Length: 391
Image (tube, rainbow, N blue to C red; front, side, top):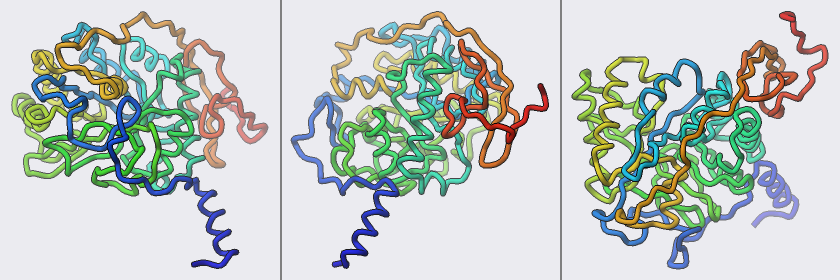
């Protein structure tokens, strides 16, 4: 028991750090789709594995640039799933160095655009300790940028991934609840791989293992988690991002077989969504990486029960599961881009430092400054503090 003044101080401290949730209760039978699901390896809808579609999540982290977009065009253009919908990847985009006209191109091609923060600070302690307000600045602000600079409707930006998969405990999920985000895909699981853990909501206590804490303990009704089912290296070690898996085979065929063996951990059990989570820079390391990746996509296309879809599509199916026999072609069809690229040379302020940044946006006049934290649309005026000697 604490004295009144010390209790009052503790309450203020909790509010200041954005901690508003209490510990979540254990999940129970009242948790039912479409808006609630317990953390579990059970197949949604009580379907048998043979009647369940195998979803594959193809995701890429970090900036979208002229360097990596050619990989995406070559890998995905013209590919379709068995329902005639285009194969869709999910891009967890960080702001700095991103070409927003290319983000618009990816979105127009049918891919999902999700968020990976504005700053992508390399300080993992920053993410671990981030308050609700800081996270809203990072992710809510980035969604505003996507709407303005890439011409993506805000309601279509639903997911996020924390940089370095560094969780912030309850705070990131409180921010998601407050800001209307749908799902997080930042939490690896090593304990629920084969069979794998299906996406679930945080209405109740999660049974997922906490790999990179602090993990959520509170109740956040309607906020979804897509668990990152870890891969296993040839030496038996777990890895969440493919490019962090050590001891990769050094031939295209052997690397493809390695991809296939990890895929089969879920495909041959409960068909939980399988993730190929990677940074496009990994393709630059060796040409066999991209060749094996394309071979793997070819293999997946040949399987009649496999669907390569976005994170939000997976959530939609888990909310209202249907058997393979009832899968239809409900999807966002590719459309011609409607972006008029505008190149801007801008001044960026970070802390008290000023640097030059080139940026490319869609259909806007160049803003007065480089968009950043607390300056999401670049409307901030720096006065004499940020001179432009290049003008």
